[in-house]
Length: 415
Image (tube, rainbow, N blue to C red):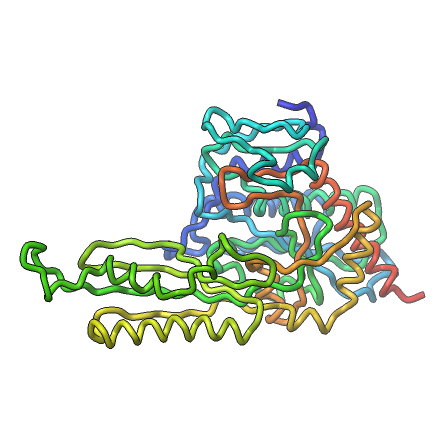
């Protein structure tokens, strides 16, 4: 265990990840799990303690806060900062046992799990040699996505108030259930009060992300015709075999493990069932709107083909759009990129912009009237046991937030 524990942002992060906030798509409550309400209560109190006003937590677990402008800077537009409280359901979020190590490039054993965090598997780790990393014990995720963002926002607010940093009006929000695509379902733009915002929900801190996937979910229900296997010839329809045939008709190269950058994919996220009934859940993703629509059309095409082959009642497809590419909105506000790039440069990094191969609350919020690109938190390998976050990069993320706040004053304050 390293001794780099005097960091304020690290202290908060370690506090937050003790709470299991793993969201659940099958839940009928909002938020989907009780741990999110527990963390929401903590963040609500910390906003108040840091000096925010009009702080409230809704019954659905959304947290809002506001910091009035420094005298004379009231004319600066309200800028907001957002992070989500829940963690992915792709790995356990219970009883997280973090380890803090000084990373020197040597492979890192994750507890006694047998898993090894190494540059062989994850080449980007080479950029973090010399950094202090928080890692897992190999049995759970870490929670850097997005408790890193939560910790960075609160820490930045504390520094702004404590150090009397001149600022325009600032808004803060923490949301539940982002990982299951519901973070903006009950978000109240008026309570948030921001004209522009940034989500803290990315990876590398030098990145400004304003392009994300168009996203849809496809649930395919397969209805078999169960017959005793001894007399099944010419009669049985095996629902699992039907699911396999459906999947085989999708482009084999257009899957997450074979695509990158702007390339879209079909992701078989879940498959369950038996020979009589089966269900496949796909995620459809593409940055290009026309290609995205073609992916949905492909699902419908295969469904129709197999219905004609096995009978109309043998399968059905349910498609649901999830979020859109916020580039359509963000391209109208180039100053947001300028603000972020300047802030990242001032923190000592070379800024870059890359497409998000996923989505954020900010993507949906942008279409709700608040342009909201994404910034990095300093973590990596999200949604699994190999997740990590750099303490030094978390501290830099705090610095970037503050640099943005200073930048809004330079850009918008009346001279």
